[in-house]
Amino acid sequence: MKFHIPNALVVSHKKIGDKIYSLIFNAPEIANSASPGQFVHIRCSNGLDPLLRRPISINDVDKEKGLVSIWYQVVGKGTEFLSKVKVGECLDVIGALGRGFDSNIDGKNVLLIGGGMGIAPLIYLGSVISKKNTVRGIFGGRNKDVIPCILSESNFDYELCTEDGSIGREGLVTDLLEDQLHKEKIDAIYSCGPKPMLTAMQRISSREEIPLQVSLEAVMACGVGACLGCAFKGYRDGEEAWLKVCKDGPVFWDSEVKW
Amino acid sequence: MKEVKLSVDVAGIQMKNPVMTASGTFGFGEVYEDFFSNELLGAMVVKGVTLKARKGNSAPRLVETPAGLINSIGLENPGVKVVLQELLPSLKKYDVPVIVNISGNVVEEYGELAGLLSSSSVVKGLEVNISCPNVKEGGMAFGSSPEMAAKVIREVKKSTNLPVIAKLSPNVTNVVEIALAVEEAGADAISLINTLLGMVIDIKRKKPVLGNIMGGLSGPAVRPVAVRMVWQVAQRVKVPVIGMGGISTAEDALQFIMAGATAVAIGTGQFVNPCCCVDVIKGLEDFCRKNGIKNINDLRGVAWNE
Ligand SMILES: Cc1cc2nc3c(=O)[nH]c(=O)nc-3n(C[C@H](O)[C@H](O)[C@H](O)COP(=O)(O)OP(=O)(O)OC[C@H]3O[C@@H](n4cnc5c(N)ncnc54)[C@H](O)[C@@H]3O)c2cc1C
Ligand SMILES: Cc1cc2nc3c(=O)[nH]c(=O)nc-3n(C[C@H](O)[C@H](O)[C@H](O)COP(=O)(O)O)c2cc1C
Ligand code: FES
Image (cartoon, rainbow over all chains, first blue to last red; front, side, top):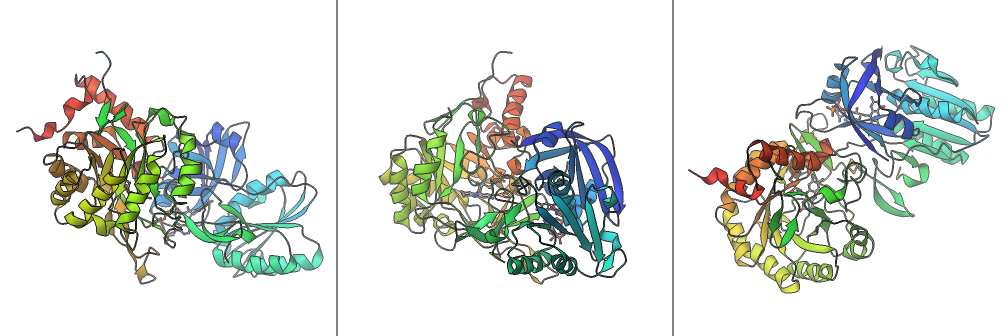
C-alpha cells in the first residue's frame, strides 16, 4: 500500500557531512508499511520549479514512533530546497514505494556494500537482517566528506574506505570486498551506490557465484509506475526489456540487469 | 445552495464530472488506486495502445524543465491483444467510462485497432492519437496535415460505433484547420493538446539529454498554449472539446472550461500530486458553490462573451 502524506512533520534535520543531511519526518503509515530498499518520493518545494518530486531511499524507520529517516546529498535544485526545510515544518511525501531488498533470509553470512549516499538504504536493511544473520558492511566514497558522520550509530559491524584515505582504509569498496572473500564464505551481497561501483561488484559476485542484489537509480516523474519514464535496459523472463526503477525496483537481482 | 451539477456529456459518454485522466499518465487504471477510488473520476483514459507490443524508446526518457517535463516514452505498451485480454477486464468493476487511446504506424492500423477494441464491453470511447511526438512512423505526422488527420478519423469511424475522439497535436501551424478537418471526417469530440515537441542539451556532455534526442513537453509550462488552442478550436467546431495541458488545480481547469472545453484531462499534474484529479473535482464543485453556479456546463465558453 502506498500513502500520500501531504503534511509529514519534520522532527529532525541535521547536517551529517559536506552537503549531506539527515532528515526525520513523522509518517506512521509509511513507517509501518516500509521495507528496506524502498524509497519515498518528496515534493521539495511548493513552487513549479522544480516541478517533480525527488526519490530518496528510506534510511531507517521507527515503527513505534511512526518516524521515517532519510539521508540525502545536495546535488541540485530539489535537494537544495529540501536542505532549507526547518524542524516543525511539513513535507509532502509519497511512500513507501518500489520493490525493496529480499530481506527474508535467515542464518546467512551477508555483506552490505555501499558507496556514497548508497550507504543510506543499507543501514535500514542491516538493522533488519542483522537480527537473524551475520551482517558486515563495507562502505566507501571519494573522501571523508561524503561519508555520513552518524554512521557509527548503526547496529552491525562495518569497515570504511575512501579513495584518498581521508577516513578508513585507502582504496575502493571492491578492494575490501576481495579481502573479505579471502577470509570467509559469503552467502549474499546487497549493494547500492554509483553505477561503476555496482558494475565492478557484479563482476566479482558473478565470478564467485554469490547472489547479488543492487539498488539502482533513474530520473523519475511519477514514482509509481504510471509514466514509464524511469526505464533501464534489463531482462524480464530472460528477455530484454525496459524495466522500471520505481516499480520493478529500485532493487534488482544481478540477473535482471543488463550490465 | 443545493447540489452542484458537475456531470457532462462528451459525445454520448456520460461523465459524473468533467475530469478525466490524460493518456499515458495513468497506466491502465491500476497505478493510483492506493490514493483514490477510480470511481470518483469523470472518465479514465488509458495508455496509448498499438496493434503490436512496443518496447518504447531508449533511456533516459525523462527530463525536467522549468515548470515542465519532457518525455520520450515512445508508446511503450503490451499491444492490443494483451490489453484486451489482460488489462481491460479488470476495469469492468469500476462505474466509470473507460476510453482507450490508440496509435497506428499506418492508417489501416487505426481501423484495425478500433475494430478490435469495439468488441470489449468495457470500452466506452476511443481517443485517436494522431499527435504522438515520440514515434518515428505515424504519430504526429498524421496530425500535421488536415488531409491525413481526416483520413485516419474516417478509417476509425468506419470500424467502430464507439464515440471517436481525435487527439490533436499543438505542433502545427493552424490547429483550427486540423480540428475542422477531423470534425468533417466524423470525429465525435476533439481532445487537445498532446505534448509540445522540445529538447534539452546537457552542456557538460555536449549531448542531448534524452535517449531519443527530442520529446514531448507537458506540465504547467504548456498551459497558456493549451488554453489558447482550446479557445480557438472550441469556437469553431460543434463537437465537444476536451482540454488538457498543464492542469494541476481547479483554477487551471476552469480556464479550459471557460475557453470552451466540455471536459478536461490531467497528466503531469498527477505525477506531482497523486490526488490531483480528485482535488480538481472537489475544487470545481467548491468554485461553483461559492459563485452560485448550479451547473458546470453553464461555465463552458463564458470567456467568449464580449
Ligand atoms: C530510488 C532512488 C533512491 C535514491 N536515494 C537517494 C538517497 O537516499 N540519498 C540521496 O542523496 N539521493 C538519492 N537518490 C538520488 C536523488 O533522487 C537525486 O540526487 C535527486 O533527485 C536530485 O535532485 P536535485 O533537484 O537536487 O538535482 P537536479 O537538479 O535534478 O540534478 C542535479 C544533478 O544530479 C543529477 N541527478 C539527478 N537525479 C539523479 C539521480 N536519480 N541519480 C543520479 N544523478 C542524478 C543530474 O543529472 C544533475 O547533474 C535516489 C534516487 C533514486 C532513483
Ligand atoms: C509520460 C507521458 C506519457 C504520455 N503518453 C501518451 C500516450 O500514450 N498517448 C497520448 O495520446 N498522449 C500521451 N501523453 C500526453 C498526455 O496525455 C497529455 O496530452 C499531455 O501530457 C498534456 O497534459 P499534461 O500537461 O496535463 O500532462 C503522455 C504524456 C506524458 C507526460
Ligand atoms: S517514475 Fe514513472 S514509471 Fe517510474
